[in-house]
Amino acid sequence: MKSVSDPAVLRREIRAGRFTGPTTGHAGGYLQGNLAVLPAALAGDFLAYCTRNPKPCPLLGVSEPGSGAIPALGADLDLRTDVPLYRVFSPAGRRERVADVRGDWRDDLVAFVLGCSFSFEESLQRAGIPLRHLAAGRNVPMYISDIATRAAGPFGGPMVVSMRGFSPADAIRAIVLSERHPLAHGAPVHIGDPARIGITDLAAPDFGDPPVLEPGDIPVFWACGVTPQVALRAAEPEIAITHEPGCMLVTDLPAEGASIGLNAA
Image (cartoon, rainbow, N blue to C red):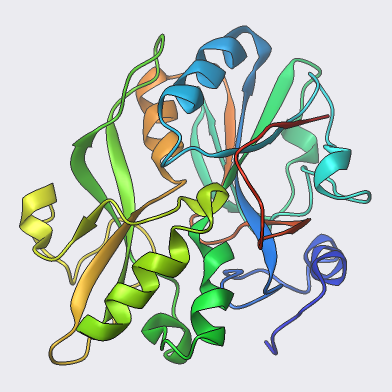
């Protein structure tokens, strides 16, 4: 699909079922968010988990219990319909690639929206830094690392990281530019040898698509907002709703100049 620049237009396309893929490369210049929805009884522990792990879990917003909206992130935004694809975790098992979760929504559910590394990609493109996954029409590769997160209540586990390959000169520039986006995970958590962070096969990501690397490329790893999905599975809540990796919630918040903060409902 041709790139959609307006986040409100993209959300309408998603809501209508006309856009069902990864959001990387779309709505450049606006913050994209990972979604984590769980019962209010666990919201305090999950908020503490995010606070203790700001690199993989930079908070963009938290909803009121039962609400499908966080107005500060977008006036017409509906958390139940505006993600291209969802995952639902419940005692009945995990359902993937769900297009609409209105039927799963409950009055006690609290939604957390966490920053995404897709948000800094436009600044890299403006600087002339190639993003190989975009050129190949692929989702970014994501891996479960052996970097431990700080636990809070039942939430804990390893950090998920996303990877992009660059020439050495471009890797340095990508590090500098991404550091300016703390709500999009900021600077990388690792550069170089994947085995140093527990990744044994770079060609086989746990989420997303296989990487595209050119000879001489250096792999650069950023903290990833899929980390809470691993923590949620370990905590085994009664129900949880997340985004399908790579299929993000696109907000109206500009990526440039955004700083750490919390936009409540």
